[in-house]
Image (cartoon, rainbow, N blue to C red; front, side, top):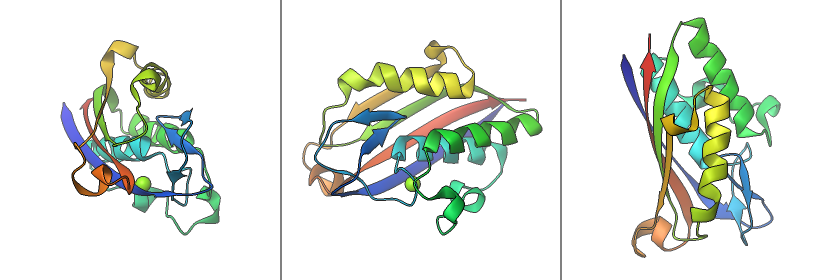
Length: 156
Ligand code: MG
């Protein structure tokens, strides 16, 4: 069994769709990024790659590559799972925390969980997604952006 941790943060930007866990969420800002800016999935990809000893998301999907411009991050996540399968590693469970002052995410959590479970090939009860504010403190609290932390176990 292996454990991995991932962290990512993106800045809010005007004129972009906000996508978290593969769910489009109504908000006045989206997240600036080369991809769709899905910070939750980026943290999860880093946790999976970390557990497998495969570096990080930037190494596999460079943010200067036209191939990944505007890409749906779920496609990146599925490519990460393919890399793990090549090493005979299977996700056991994942626990993700999204840190955002706004928007409120509670009503979107079930859809995010369903998407992630599908991409990881796991039952939904093996996926946990939480959202928290920072009570107004720091960059998330000031509404400058959103961050996410992820922890996963891999079975071999
Ligand atoms: Mg990112």
